[in-house]
Image (cartoon, rainbow, N blue to C red; front, side, top):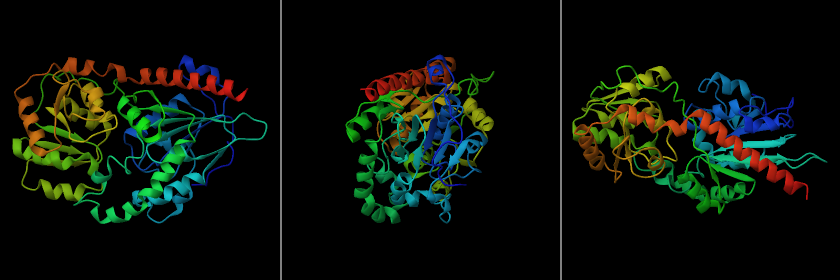
Length: 402
């Protein structure tokens, strides 16, 4: 993979729904933190690539084996971190170096920069060309850097990455400094939820528009036998500490409920040890068709983590599966208590086990569960984001012409 190019090889344009057609002649760059797996942020990035079909895509680290062919095809450049040993597998441990790496990525020759950021992507250096209008930088913020504050303990807690906690604590002031500085690079923030909008206000003192992430509700749909559910509960997603899958395992042990887990990640060995002697099945990574089948058949999706938004929960509901979610974070904007799922108040196994027992005594209309997901369809994302970018560009041009 080549280093960051200093100018686009060809004019990148915007096309898509009506509100973006005006920008057909703009040169556009997308930048994403890293491409090492297909999670919620990467699904959003795929939608951004559809909205900006000729834009160049940049990222700090790119592992083509772990992301979709479309994303890999679009990558125009990476940072110097790409050359570091084992960085594709151990990229999280390079976090203290990421501010320097992203600052070295100079995006020149573009009219519009759209960063897809939950870490440092919004910090790329935007270099205006002589006699040209300064580029507009719109940041689609999945969250302010979660590693610094509200998820620090979950990322570096005992039993997972506790050995790295002391080292990361040393870099906390450094990362906080850069996080604050990077926020000043952004002309317009877009938050993926009202939950994240409040975090942006608290972290950066900036307002943000809310545009919910897109969910493919055409693919994730009810099955012909959606009313006939199997008795197992489901967890799906990356097996990483902040997802708190340990709580789901212990809760199912208490409730004597079968659990299936789809996903891979750094916490897998610890979770497998925790699950010994329980009715827990680890299914590893599975293609989307298999994941959809489990959404369509499970009793409910368990969601013990606090998420920024939570695309997985919406995918499950689109398939008619109720969600048992921690009553915090993005779930409060996606799950309707008693209609499309249940909330549990405390992030403990007993609190989740009590909710599991309540759900087994309840009934849900699976079509009504799915109906709660209409506002998260891909078309709604495209239309709303297109309107925000259009308004931002109009204001930007007016300000630059003064």
